[in-house]
Structures are given as C-alpha cells and as structure tokens.
Length: 212
Image (cartoon, rainbow, N blue to C red; front, side, top):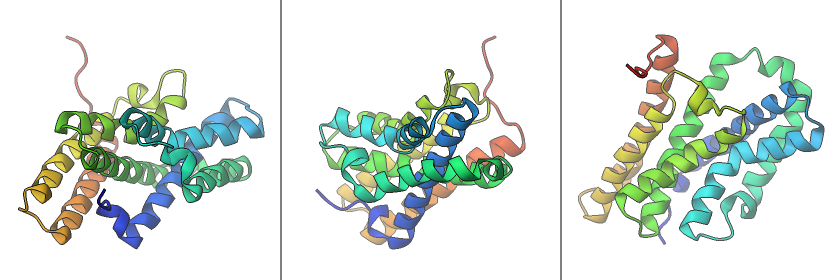
C-alpha cells in the first residue's frame, strides 16, 4: 500500500492534527451546550474528530480503524475534549477561525479518505462515498439533527466535489500521467477549493435550492 500524498508531507500532517483537534473542539462544544459531563465531552470530541475515519476503515476492512489505532490522533482528539471543558467561552467567539479550520478538516479528510479507499482497490464511486464518510461522518454525532443537514450553506457539496476531483488525480497517478509532486500539488489545490467553497457559501449565504 502506497503512502498517501498529503500524509507524506510534514506540513499537511500538522494541519491534519490541527483539524482533528478543532473537530474535537466542535464536538466537545456541542457536549458543553447540552450539559454533558466531562467523560461524555471526551467521547463526543473523539467521535466527532475521528468517527468518519472509523466508519471508512470498518467499511473498507482496514482494521483496526485509525480512530482507535493511531495514538497521536486519539490523544489529540481526547485533549481537545479536555481543552473545551476549560476554554469553551472563548471558542464560542472564534466563529470564522473555527469555520476555516472545520473547512480545512473537511477538505483534508475528503482527500485522504478518497485516496485511501482507492489505494485499497475500491472503485471510483465507492471511493467518493468513503471520502465523504471520512469528512462528514464525525459530524453526525454533533446534534440530534446533524450539522451537515441542518446547515443550509454548502457543507457536504464541497466535500463531494473534493472527493470526485481526488479520484481523477489518483487515476492520473495510477495511469502514470502525474508524478508524485503533481499529485501533492493537486491534492493541496483540492483542499483549498473545498475551503474556499465552504467559506464563500457562508460569507455570501450561498445555498442549494430546496423542494419546489
């Protein structure tokens, strides 16, 4: 199994840890608002940060899932739960910072999830779903009505676009049309595109139409 492009870059690995931490903060913040106890905050933070990867790995048969086997990611998620118990009043004020980090998390998880699925031999369509599970699965524990459904701005759509584009990039690498450097550059561009789509949709209230 080949090393995933973004995971081979220390800078983007650092961003991924930051994304795990901030995803955990958002899950923990939801637990604070629901008056959960500290243990429940830790579990909610962990599930929010790593739940999507667990769903992906279980469905792909890549066991044990990274959400319980990668010590760095697990500790990062749990630390975010401890942190939110103390700093939750301040985190509530950092709306755009949290939106940006959350969008980064969605972009990175979408690209990595799709790439991992393709690396394990799935079809392109299956890889897109696995990428979306990775990016959005953890958010399903945030609310009775998940944020990816409740948020009317573009959330799942940027993830889907990122996953589809990642399939094309990975196929280009498999067919020897792209080298490793080109793969990293294009993967980074996809992450940026996901972030820009998400933030612009919030800034300018861009929403998909509902039922006629």
